[in-house]
Image (cartoon, rainbow, N blue to C red; front, side, top):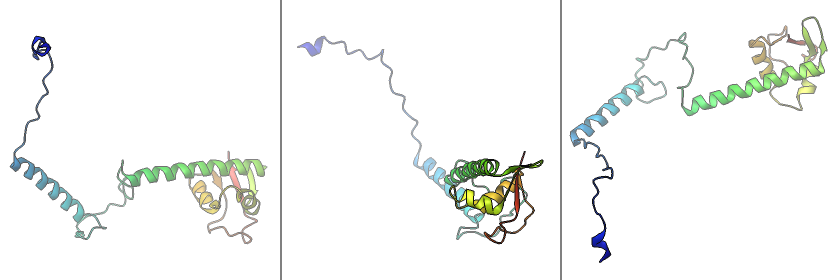
Length: 159
């Protein structure tokens, strides 16, 4: 029989290491601690039914209003920020292409920009506000732009 002539010595092969088995009490304690942590977190979550109002919100904290890093909300926030940056870049390109060069930068009226930008996006006013906040454009206008009413307002893409 060929089976009896094979070497069955397994001492040279690695034996699988066995994970230490935890007792039922250790597993129960682990789950109890997880439940306690979750319940504490829910008490400070204003969107939870368990919210008790004890959470003190510091609106000056750098993480205030920001999603938890690594979460799906954080991923959506990052994607949104990238989209806004791309739109601002496109806006500046259109102003430089369609506007007139001046000592301050490139100038275009809102009316002319509206016509040029409508082929690109339907979010011109929001992008104008974000670009102004980032100080890449300037305009003397504090209200939301309205087509027709604000066609004369000059928008400047800064150097």
